[in-house]
Length: 107
Length: 143
Figure 1 (cartoon, helix red, strand yellow):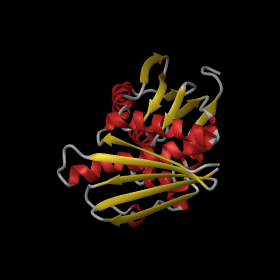
Figure 2: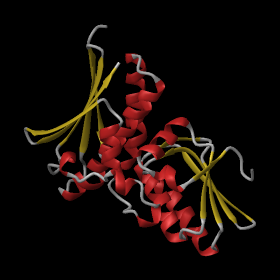
Figure 3: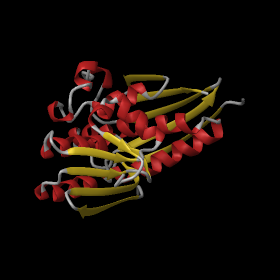
């Protein structure tokens, strides 16, 4: 089994989802479920805290694309502290164009 | 470096993805592959293994499918071979997203197509062949 955890916090107009461990096809449904729960809340910002996310396959990228498509272009997608390898994956797949990177949230 | 080979069979279900990464990481460590290249190898193999599990064996209606992984370390290369007996699936037949598609805002993108791209682009060499009733996906990393 892959170790993975997902935790959601709502603060003001932001939905903050903290991802830890390994995000692959076996664990992506948990992330998808968390995203689906925050969509009806109409957050202005979707914050993904990925500082402790050690691995992300395309199954995780698909959930991020799904989230952005459901929330719409006015909602800011923020990634907190992606590890180097995840950053490389975001570059390779062009997702980096659509996210804002920060070291801390709130900044 | 002396040549070495080891192999392990994994049940074709998603719970095997973690153990497959562990097997690759342990082998990569023995071969002296650095952390970054080890991650890339794990990512590439993960994408193809996921396809075999989710589509290959599902399509062929096989419930107890096996993914047989062999790691060879020799001649300054680490070679990871995945063999499965699912329906033939050639990753090179799949259309890859082009630069224009990859630069589109996420709202205008298709959700799929990224996995095979990650498999091909994260290793030094990626090959596929169908032989003796098996899919062979071969990943090569230069040491």
